[in-house]
Length: 237
Image 1 (cartoon, rainbow, N blue to C red):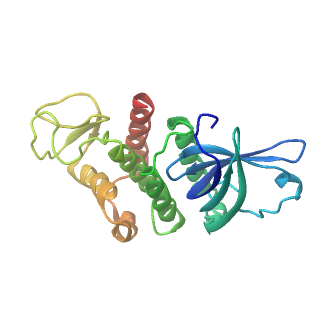
Image 2: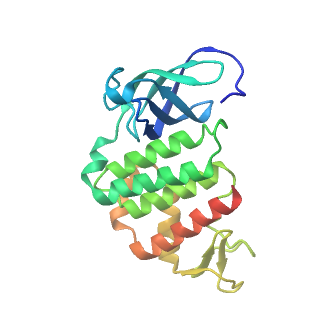
């Protein structure tokens, strides 16, 4: 924060990732801001009600953040809330999934380094997670695959990475898929399972909601493949 040049008022879109209160009643909010990346914003007195933000500093709140950039700290002045994803809290499974995604963002991004392409991926993934018709396991697979794609690291799912063929049965790893002929280590997938993962990764928002419940792949297998993506992300960042 101290190495940011310029002072004054900044208004940027973003999302609250975490917050921390001090015994003195001050609140620090860690926000993924457009054009700025993850940054800490200080809200003096907010934790004791001196400055009233309501629920706008809760994690997963999206909006436009009004920030004063001081010489050594950035201060939160106001938040125009766009979406709070409060409905996720009614499902323990879905809110835990959202919190897990936040943990991945905290662990795989650097403070003060912009990552604008991640913001829409995160927002629309939360929107899918909020829809009860969408499978949360496939939504998580989609989130990590699309995150890897915007960073140029998503594994190929359509063709064998060794020979370029369209495989029937295949083996999935963080580097892509191999057909049975080429072999290799990885998670074995039937053609139906591979196509289900491919469709979940690349389909449009509405198509995902309509089809995820009919996907021909079990939750345990989806979770195993998603874990591969998470490890790939952690190893490359």
